[in-house]
Image (cartoon, rainbow, N blue to C red):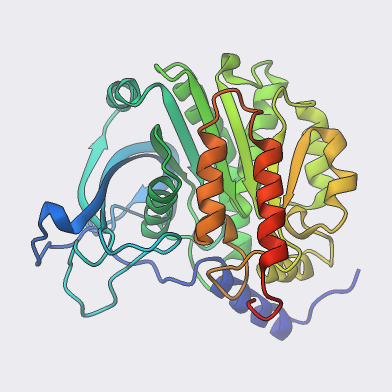
Length: 367
């Protein structure tokens, strides 16, 4: 196996970092200098949080990139401006005033000192939203603020009707933190399993999982553990499992699926062979292919019980083509349509065909 020189490895890591998040972690909470009217606000979302991050010494950051051995719980309220464009996260830049009429803004953060209190608050929200829950697991190089805002954007743009839950593992969000993040992800898999069990014991009737990049590895590990313990479908409550741009070695993914067994509802794998972030991840891993840009996925992985959706021709919101599922307006809308199906099967073909149409319509120079 060819080993990357240290200088080249550092350069690869730096570029990979830019592709996965691209936004330096900043304070989630600030002082609302500008007051916005109701007419200036498009949405107000309560994001429930289970995290393996340590609480930050800066209360405005809420949680930082350090690991905690204990699972912490919180809820953050986020407003979305009326001027919001589908697929984008309007963030204020340094020196700008907090203005809910222009930017995504956190208006309130509430902590829970026990799982029981968190579950009680969850139950109230779940009951009000029809019994649906979406758990989002973010990827590599993602600060806590970035993760909260990304889930808010997905929920808002997809029109997801249920309760959003962010599982945030301790990503360091640093330029050379790939190995730290990989180990943080490994340390978090038991706590993701515990979070899924907690949700299964709540009033939820269906739990959907949406994971991105390295977060797909954490998700697959937690599902694998649940399968080993005989509860792979969370007592019949597991809905859709969406794996977007999976940063998982193909052979590792196959072994995870073999242990899990063929799922009752096919897992949905969203991939793109022009994903430059995963191309760099593959270089770091000794040129081993990642699931998220695996050219033979449609023929090689479907027998494991997955539906492969190729997003290769769809336009991306970033130059690394790594977050198409969320920042492409058409794709995030289709994701919402898929998740709103109650039977888990009805729109598989429809959504796949629509993405194929998007690929065919994409201009070769648009990427």
